[in-house]
Image 1 (cartoon, rainbow, N blue to C red):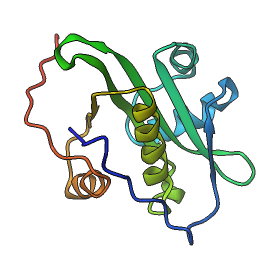
Image 2 (cartoon, rainbow, N blue to C red):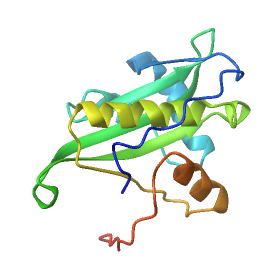
Image 3 (cartoon, rainbow, N blue to C red):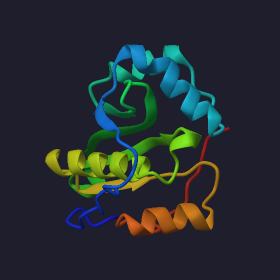
Length: 155
């Protein structure tokens, strides 16, 4: 669990320019392409459903021409065992050409900031492709630590 009081480092000011904004329905093809590039099975219909859900917030990073280059989604809900609101970062993806340019870090920072505003008591990120050394280093550098939990899925 990250400590929600730990600041997330700011993106490198020398990095290529991009902006972060709330996702729109028209962003679906770009978001789906980024997630599928990373091995997900995303589709535009599901994205349209998700973006309309009141307990999910989706932000995108966009290049100077407003093309989607990154995405983060934050879902939040009340949870008895934490005595308040819990949240998870469900998607965090960056177009290959924009990796290591501060996009993922900035998107993660914005999601953490939003979780603080919502009064989240626990914030988690799950990776489905396993935790590589690079992924571990990225999340540790942004204030997250590995959780010792078991996850069970219904087949």
